[in-house]
Amino acid sequence: MRIVVLTGAGISAESGVPTFRDAGGLWEGHRVEDVATPEGFEADPELVLRFYDERRRGVASVVPNEAHRALAALEDVIRDHLLVVTQNVDDLHERAGSRNLVHMHGELRRALCAVCGSRPEWTGDLVDRPPCPVCGERMLRPDVVWFGEMPYGLDRIEQAVVACDVFVSIGTSGAVYPAAGYVALAAAFGARTVELNLEPTDAAVPFDEVRTGRAGEVVPAWVDEVIAAR
Ligand code: BV8
Image 1 (cartoon, rainbow, N blue to C red):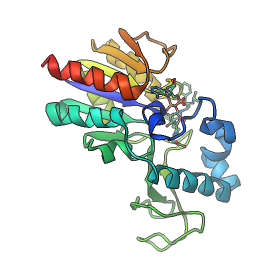
Image 2: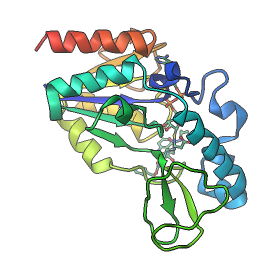
Image 3: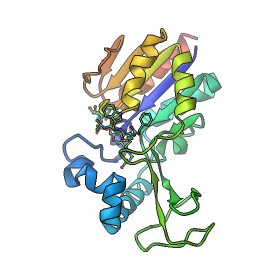
Image 4: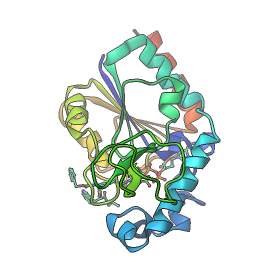
């Protein structure tokens, strides 16, 4: 059985990473267009670099939760029959042990050089404009995909979605495209679709099954069932 899991901010909420749209979410403190668009970066690079430096430090101070660990355990059992596609820029999936993983919206733990295009691993701040370790220019930005920019790994993701038997969406409001369009694509190619979320979302194409609750509870329970059913 081939499984594709799409995750969003909700899977990291119980680790203490703020979501976007929920109360107290990231977008409450900042206008999306100010901090997550190329135009916003152009207009005020210091504001944007500080916003992501704070988030990078925040993620370094938290740990993966039961939901992240359950998906890593499922990968241990079904190997490359599982692909995790995450919209999250935190590194909690890989710290939990997931390897078959695509960060379609980039990673806080990488920088992107606007001059030479290199994407070095990055754990420190960027607001003090450090030199690129490859070309030496001081034009590093967070390696995250801003609105209007092309997401990463689209070909690999689409190949897996059209070939999967089960498509599972975890902790995402389904508000951002192309990620929000994958449930429809999976359904169109005959996959069974499952939503695991705190509350049902009004997805364009309804899921075959919706389980509501905290990811830290519903994800391990679902994984146990999948493994037991093998
Ligand atoms: C692009 C990185 C061209 C930065 C992010 C079609 C129609 C309309 C618009 C568009 C369209 N196609 C493109 C667009 C434009 C735009 C878009 O979608 N706009 C929206 C606002 C309408 N998309 C783009 O610009 C994309 N690029 O299209 O390029 C193109 C086109 C086609 C093919 C190729 C290229 C790029 C978008 C990426 C932007 N970058 N992140 C950063 O992180 O700062 S998006 C960012 O916001 C996240 O990555 C994520 O994608 C989104 C947040 O959503 P969620 O993760 O779902 O979080 P949210 O808070 O909303 O929801 C949390 C959910 O969890 C809730 O449902 C809640 O109930 C639940 N929850 C909470 N706690 C728990 C829980 N569940 C379980 N347990 C809990 N404990």
